[in-house]
Length: 243
Image (tube, rainbow, N blue to C red; front, top):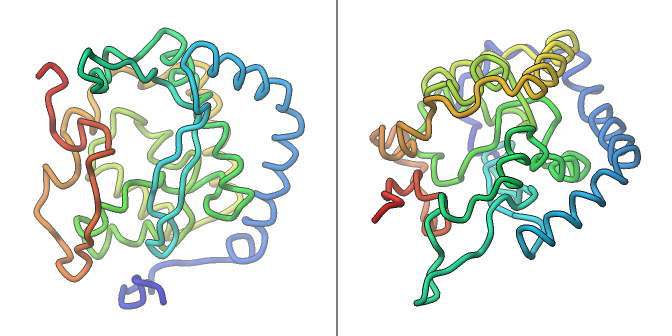
């Protein structure tokens, strides 16, 4: 049963496109993209294996539609370099120029095409975040999970890394309330434009604020879940990499 059942979704308007066209169209587009991009994906797989190690793919549990968890797939962008005691080095020491290249051009996101084909995600939608964040959304912000998360979304083309938490969620809810083909097409075009221009990269972002649980108190106590956070990025745990 959906954990969103008690939310007031009276302002959500889903037309024919959102109800019957969006998911099948996502499937077809991503399947064709995988076929067309297969040579590029093969080269990237080989380069990731050689330059960064294995496994080639990085999987992480994220929150999907109806707040159900799923495994999001990306190319790895860091090595597994460790210190003399066998502990992983700080993230900044495990980044490479190749990893930065993958992130700057969003190539690490390409494996998410598989998530779309599986039905876990959509091409356009709110970016899936950690399941650990679920209790920290307000009832209004939880509407972002009334739809499938996306590879890109309204927040990503309106600031990308620049967006703070409140801004990001406001864009997510705005999108979830009114899904149209025209809006999806516009977001897709703006995404391509920003990726090629490398817009909004390396500037103040939610990473400076810290994890959502750092900047907020629990908003929905009844949604508190027992989630392991040790494997999350250190900025989420609010740990200083230099220590």
